[in-house]
Length: 150
Image (cartoon, rainbow, N blue to C red):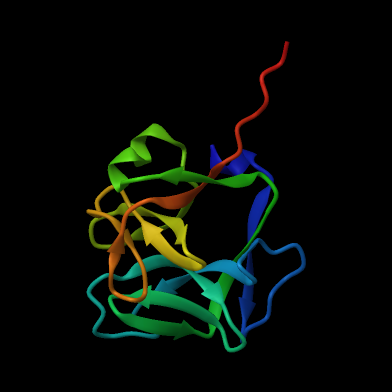
């Protein structure tokens, strides 16, 4: 389903952002691989969502910000933000899959609230942000609905 939509992931490094990147609150959205190449003691390896700053991709992990020098940037035109109150509502929408936790194979999605970018997953009790607090009432990046034809 995702491969039929007009978006792509563009490889980048060192804070570079490709043309037509998707921005939220002035930050390009991206994803990066938390693996043994960068982090040997991580429990939740896999592809995680984040945003690009001047040095690379910033991913939240617990209460820490992790900088990945190599990453992929989202270049897209067919997504929009939808408000939901709890992660249990993720099954009622079609969220854009940004990553997956390697250990439990659960999908991860972009979440945002109050100018902050975080993550959501059906396996998580709530939306997660880098400040370490789980939040309610966030927006999730989803596929745009096609208008109904008459």
